[in-house]
Length: 97
Image (cartoon, rainbow, N blue to C red; front, side):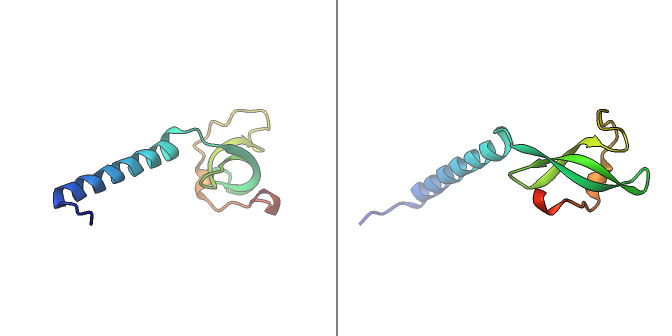
């Protein structure tokens, strides 16, 4: 029968944990993410009203990362605000979910 000493078992477990941690770190931190633009309605904290916007959604975590375009600023204008609207509840069309 195969037996391990305490030191060997500890080193084996530490090696597996290091390998698993390295792979997870590589996948979630260093590999590029797939992002998709999604149309949504957000509540603008500056204007205190709902406005249409195009948001960038991270396809791995299904969370919204940034505002790409905002109807208030104009469709072609760069978004230069603090994007605090991402912290408010979003209204996303059912087809985009």
